Length: 523
Image (cartoon, rainbow, N blue to C red; front, top):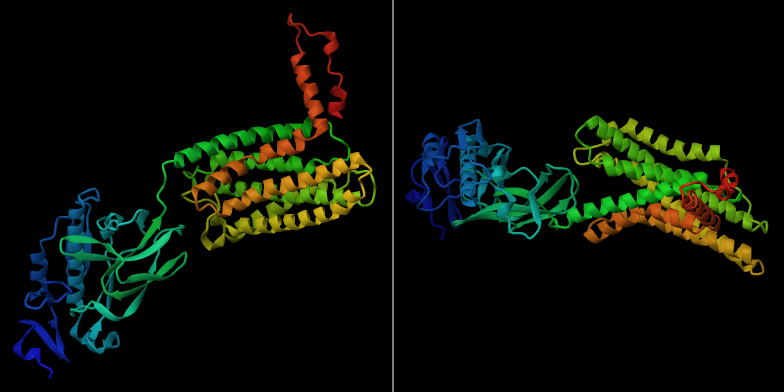
């Protein structure tokens, strides 16, 4: 038998009681607020006028409220105060906000199209509200986690005013937008839980059902105050060590790139070797790494930062294009092996190489800047922004070039295998061919695979590998194309011997130590 609790005036004065099968619920009349907020406690909650309710709260100086307009949080209490004081301030702000929302709901709203109906609680107005500034008191320190945690959204409160119900028969979905640029990490839906003297962020009854770069959908089985927390791996103490390793490795790589450039310019090379592509590859890498080292963090001036980002975009794209042209040169060289028994200089002319090597990257950068000029530079780094997928103006061409290089690498190896089989009698020719194969493999691994690591820097191990290997591209180029070249080693010996014998014991220059090979070097 259903008992009508409302017949005994169970809700008290200034309230309206509604009987339901097996239960009942209470709402305060228009202009009155429940003393316990949105949760009705039988025998405890009373309905007081809005003015009396706000006066009875006696909030700290940091919180002020104006009925029907706004709730304001000032800076009289700083986030550096104790957690208990922060929690009390946050709870007070939320109570005032919920009380105002409850007071502003008109009784007529229960009958219009904004109402929702369930079998257990009848009809009610749903309210979503956000209080600016309260996040400074509801910090991530109230959430238990071993990770680095930060507030990733605005703090919102979802309520059904003038009801005592917070639990929902079915989960409700909230779409919460991120207030910061997308970062890799774990996005967690949490709610503000008050339980006795303990106040904290909790995940009970809330899960993240979907998330992308812009927003997260939270599915919750109750109403409360919600937020998104972003959890990232704890920053280890060796981040400064990583910067030191990067500085040292970049300096070493730049030094060897400079030596390689000087070698390509000053040495006398075999006529069958075309060094145009690798020379400009080294120049682009040298300028790109140097500018990255000294300019990527220069974010003070937005215009200068955008220019640096654009130059880095151009230089690194140029290095990839020159790497592709170098592979093309090697392919044309290998093709000549199957036709003649002597390797001859073959390939595109230097003018055509320059037009392609610098023209193609210039077109990509020009089009990218025309489509989205604000994509260059940000407050974090002088590089390409991730908004509107702008980084694909670099990632796309790089992925295409790496794919072409891989295909070219396979084709070159396939064409060289029968050539090697037919050259067993010619030891010199076979040795040259094997050296070409080694250089092709080394170049693909050094100039291609090291960049691939840049897309998978989720752990410190991968970050160290990328920093070390990518910064040593100049070192690898110098070893493969300079130190492993017999003619270059001989010229190094002549230069060193000339430097060592330039002055005799008395400081005079012996006549017999004139540089006999200077004519060959300049040719």
